[in-house]
Length: 149
Ligand code: TYD
Image 1 (tube, protein in one colour):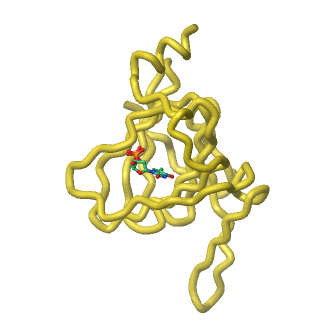
Image 2 (cartoon, protein in one colour; image 1 turned 180 degrees about the horizontal axis):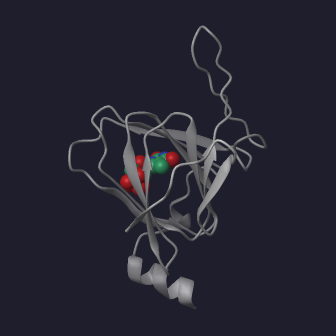
């Protein structure tokens, strides 16, 4: 497994896998503290149709284990951290998400698994479509067939 390297101060995005990028989210804090605004067309590379968040994840739980046919998403660990495993059917990359100023954009046809959640992790996910179970590919063999077709 390869761990994605940290973003540098001079680059705002870092390619992780085709269609997947780490994005340095624009800080708007001041001497009162920090603030980050997420807008479609801003740091979020799509129009936002849905937001959901994963929290209270029990120790040792792994989730995800699916790809999306068309959905684009951006994930941010607002507190705590977790590891996102991304797989394009050719290679796998582990990305540790543990900073509220770093987003991970994920395109379609990427298998993703999430693990190693800290107990305090709140993983915010923005998506460009509303929830649609028919967009999910939940069988890894089927995912590989589609990628390699
Ligand atoms: P699930 O897809 O199992 O989550 P993950 O892939 O992150 O492990 O989703 C858990 C449940 O929540 C499932 O019943 C579907 C539902 N759900 C929604 O209703 N809307 C949503 O936006 C999401 C992501 C899930």
